[in-house]
Length: 315
Image: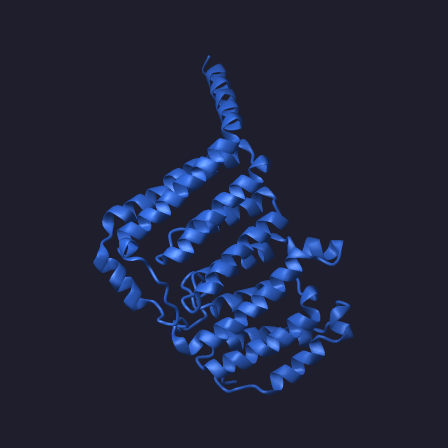
């Protein structure tokens, strides 16, 4: 079938998926297959109206039975939303190189983001122990985090990007296992190098807030990875390079390439790319100061223990 043909029958079919049988986990293979076909159509269509119709149909499913999605089915839905984000982070080889960062796809991106918020709400507030176990599966967790990053990179609406960054923090706070924390910090570090000052500044502040708020749970290995790889030789190294290697022309080029649907007033004293990167680096240094002020004694003690342990092995 042609994925570019609007499928007005799909919302009606999907309403049946949100009925009692679907909610009770007794959904038929036909219903799950319909869900996969819907997601495939949304991902592959080149027509915005088709995508909008499909996303609205998907919202019917999520509102009625989203808490019943699990495993591969949940991952497929989340990956579909990532494709429609309008960012350049997610690529699964099935989007036919469609540029969804253009203005024509803005509405589809907005609907997709609303669907993501429904899924994240289910993740943050599981209704049962089974729900909690299902949503914390590695594949689902990773797909949701990747989707948040995709919308963080979205070129459609700066507010969507900033909200998705907040979602990353909420997800880390809700599930603060080492695996999730490491993933979230790596995603925030990636967004902290975005070409838009507002996005990277928000990411930097959120990253250090996560470290300050959850640092008590870090293992020695996590601290080493966080400080040496993520912060010092990660974002700060790249920020210094960007600050020293950019100029006013690069900022103007960046502004001309980005969507004109949002404009942020910038004082003339901060209107160069290098100065804006400098501001971001200052935020990172202040964040590092917060971390060291709060955890310096613990880090020093752990450093001494590691050093002593290493010396004992040499002897």
